[in-house]
Amino acid sequence: MTPVPLRPDLAAVADAVPEGARVLDIGCGDGQLLAWLRDTKGVEGRGIELDPDDVAAAVGRGLAVVQGDADTDLADYPDAAFDVVILSNTLQAMHRPAAVLAQLVRIGRSAVVSFPNFGHWRVRLSLSLGGRMPVTRSLPVSWHETPNIHFCTIADFEALAVEMGLTVERRAGLSSGRQVALWPNLLADTGVFVLRR
Amino acid sequence: MDERFGLDRRVTLPGDFPLAGGGVLPELTIAYETYGTLNAAGSNAILICHALTLDQYVASAHPRTGKPGWWTRLVGPGQPVDPEHWFVICANVLGGCMGSTGPTSTDPRTGQPYAMDFPVITIADMVEAQARLLDHLGVGTLAAVIGGSMGGMQALTWAVKHPARVKKVVAIATAARHSAQNIAFHEVGRQAIMADPMWAGGAYAADRPPAAGLAVARMAAHITYLSEEGLTEKFGRRLQDRDAVSFGFDADFQVESYLRYQGLSFVERFDANSYLYITRAMDYFDLAEPHGGSLARAFAGVQSRFCLVSFTSDWLYPTAESRRIVRALNAAGAPVSFVELESPFGHDAFLLDAPEMNRVIRGFLTA
Image (tube, rainbow over all chains, first blue to last red; front, side, top):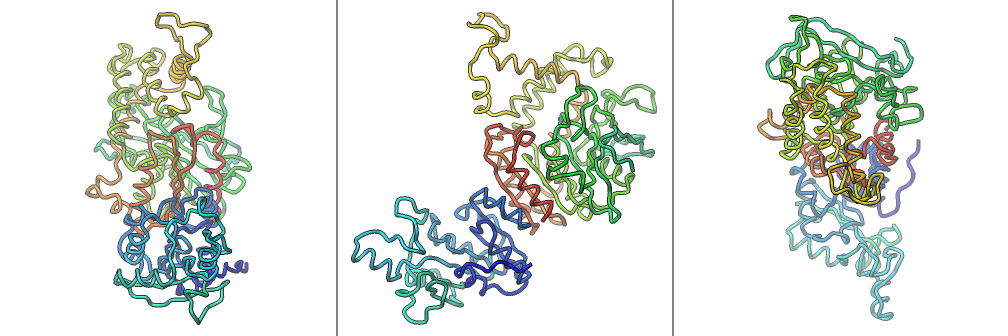
């Protein structure tokens, strides 16, 4: 069985996961990334997901997924329980992003975090010229319906990592899934960071 | 092996059966049902563990009530536990009253029923009795142990006591210990039975049981299996066969009539002393206690994959208890899945139509 190709932002996250690693995917949805990592990289994966339908779907894929909330439940996991902890496209929906980040690097030897870049030129354009909160490809929901309550730019995230004393092992800006070499904070719609305590 | 459904099987295993509480039974009889066939590799056996007042008739008609099996929504053709693929075993628990050794059994040493001379048993003793049955059936490893409520306690105990024998554990609407509230409700039931003069210190004749006491015990317990929301929806303040309250103590309200019926019909199929012993076994249940109170340590040696399911309106074994188990399994590094399902039906939800639960269990078993 050939695994289904991953969404571009997930592919960038998956690149940062070594073969055979113990992985915790927080906000794992229906388990697409975890199943892919298991089938192609022999990863031993676990997941946390808020939505019960998604949990049911992930369990149906043979994954070990626990219904839970990253804002509250991460404290239950022991230190360094995983090689890699993944938080893909979820940080902006957390009530306490910094506290969640601290948990990530405690539970995992490394943490892979991806998030929509609020510094992307489309967002800036929408705000500066349109005067409206952006509704873009990577931020498709209007402000009053979005679960995303803590937006940041790639530069903001970098600053937070420094403030928290975290080591940034790798950083990448993606535009439509492709690496952006120049001015990522302006040209990338997604930021992907690999962090370590 | 006879492949027909059910068949009301029974086996007496000779030799002492030592109990966790220090007692010894001189012999052990286990009444059980099986469905499907054990494959040549012996890799398709699933043990179903039943709840407090249920029995081995998980997917076959109850011999006394004629009602269909209690979990045909999960076990049967086309269901997640399909006897076409799985060899399904369900045994009446030790201490039960549907054929397995319990207080109604005859003590071979005296020729009299054990009654209150029956030793106090534990959930772990129930599991050991099941293990002996599996030895007898030639089942080495279980593909899965599945149980809800007290059945879930047995399933968890299986993983702890026989880690190499259990591949997967499904524990539904359950807890790793009995809470003060759980014990309190059981004590109300036991006191109702023992306050009935017909109980006679447990030495009642089979045809003269403490019916009133047992019925009250069942009424109290039955409330804990439902939810306020469910009761309100089902009965509200509606009156039973009348247009106005009687200003008396008849069952004016539908909910009273319903509970009285539940109590009376329970007496037809359950033994009062069995109820005392099994509720006690549940009250003594605390997986963490032998491990210095650490549930994670209790799970330290497990080798199974786990799937836990809870229901939003279950206040008997609420979601918090399942989460406690999930936390401990995570700390022990065991693979665990957990989902809390929406239901208005309280603890009983696991026995009712629960397509989401079936979906999760089907996925967990086949993956």
